[in-house]
Length: 366
Image (cartoon, rainbow, N blue to C red):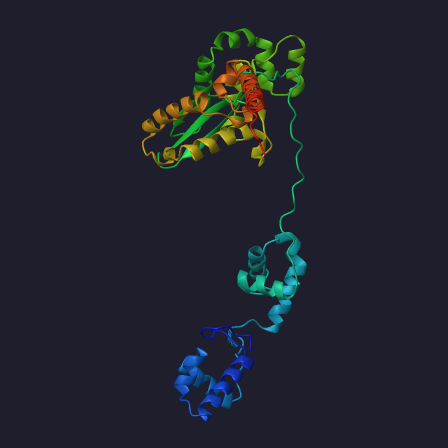
């Protein structure tokens, strides 16, 4: 009967029920009590009695669930749903919209769930939203130099318990977390404050003043790549490139004018593609993942103080995998190459020492 040792399952088919009842009948014919027979079979006695009554009525098999509700849809309504699908499926592309459309055009009045069930039974599939043609990833400008303080990324992240947002700026090349500004708002004002702090932190104010000629500032405010390239060809190179997503705080003309005034060019990722600014997104992931207590802080001032403390640890203590395990501060100050070279030399020397030790001591390595 396909049963295993133990109680009879909650659902069994008519063949199993008939077999169990036959065993009970055989046991009672042999002098056993019905209760004892049911106990040995792992079958509840009342359940066996109900099965026996259904066997006499010839209805041992379970009936289909649901029965025959009086409010079930009619055949004409089922046909109307198919007609509605043919006429409006390509336009509405959603079972909820299609159900509302049926009522709107007075063709069929059914719930969204009923319409979806009928479509599935009829093997009718709504097309869904059309896929957007992928936008090509914007390339780096030709004037860009891959070195420290030449490419920055910035973005906002939220700390809901503190009811605050924090804007952070990171150097893409060296992964140095340059600055953070905590505020209850996300506007171009916070962007301005953060970039002023970053320029001060890196000692770039004089370089920004020297680079921000009138023609370059005008080209950066214009934002057209050809106009900027023309200014660069005339020997006017932007101080650095600032990368961000397409948030309104970043796209606003106020932010563009601010950055242009200090000779910083803007570069935006594709809408809906956070991978284009993965460096800053990864920074936020590390911050909240490795210092989870930050998201439990409720006071904005305390959050700002703690973020400054975490920033120091991130830059000077935490080894960064993308930098081959040196700190961002090591890479930013130019010590990274020497540290990596010393590590490679140490590994080679250690290997040489182990070989020499075993050769001189005849150590069996097998």
